[in-house]
Amino acid sequence: MFSPELTSNPHFFYNPSIHRAFISTLLLLLFFYLNYYVFIPHYYISKKYKVYALLILCFFLLFLIVPEMHKLWRPFLIERSTSTLMPPPRPFINMLSHRLLEFSGVLIFSLLLKLRERLKLIEVEKANAELAYLKAQINPHFLFNTLNSIYSLALTNSSKTAESIVKLSDMMRYVLSESNLEEVLVSKEKEYIFNFIELQILRLSPSIKLSCSWEGDSDQLTISPLLIIPFIENAFKHGVNSEEDSEISIQIVIIKFELRLQVKNKIVTENNATLEKSGIGIVTTKRRLDLLYPEKHSLTCLETDGWYCVDLKIRLND
Image 1 (cartoon, rainbow, N blue to C red):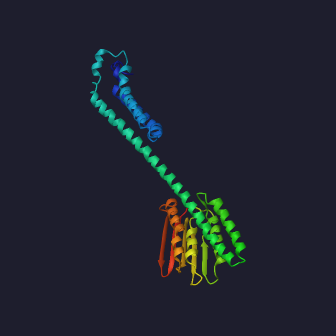
Image 2: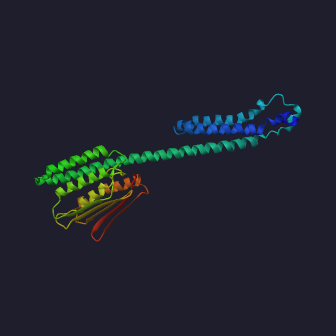
């Protein structure tokens, strides 16, 4: 049972300070979500600054007025003698500065949070657009080099010309159907790489030494399409000269979720035109690696003892 003293005191049931704080907190939460999901996206980001400022001002006025309306909601039966127990009203300037500080904190926090989210979204969209551009660079580069190979066979009336066209057809089918995907099975990329190497063998002189190996299980792994072929393509483009001792070594090893590519070619004499046009595919691929596998790859390209060596490691996702 409650004591008569407690039940007869209306302040046992009503505390204006708690009531004011509760209403203020609800209004701040409401303002945060409205500002984050409605005001900023529709007015601030759309550069409708006047409308946005007006909305903020209106809500701030509500935040000032509504919590103070508790005076109107006080019970009418409070005895005049008990009113002396009520806390004295705060000076207006103190109340205004306190409310302004609270409101500004929520305003700035929600604005920074939304702008940070917007910035991340812009970065993702920019990266996707850049990847699309890089892929568009790779496909013509591949086609140009492959057609050059077939053209050299046609000039000598080689019986291998028809076979090379079939290989090119298989490769183009892969490029058209798979290159627009974010990732493909490593086994499909392997098939494409071996088709490319076989196409190069058709035009190479028997005196040119070529070794190629692939070790490890790749059935469940995926990779971004056409990512490692530029390094192999570069070896055939810049490591072959029929008048010099030419040699190319290609090794691909998969251990668990890591793919390692090692490509070596002897450095041969190249004409100035070839040197000026070289490196497009490599530069493009380096940029793709940075975008697609940040902190998940390592790449070393160097010249040593008459060899040009590429060592690439990529941490793949299963």
